[in-house]
Picture 1 (cartoon, rainbow, N blue to C red):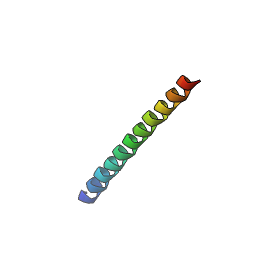
Picture 2: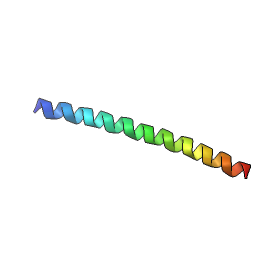
Picture 3: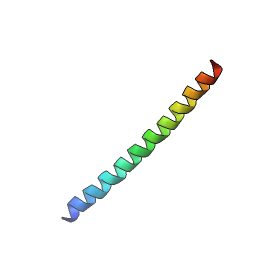
Length: 40
């Protein structure tokens, strides 16, 4: 049971990291998009 909980905690941490990276990438993408839009 402990093994399952440990793996679950690890998976949750990995998912959290991935979600944060996706959010950061999205912010960066939006900034570039707005920048290009402003230049046009």
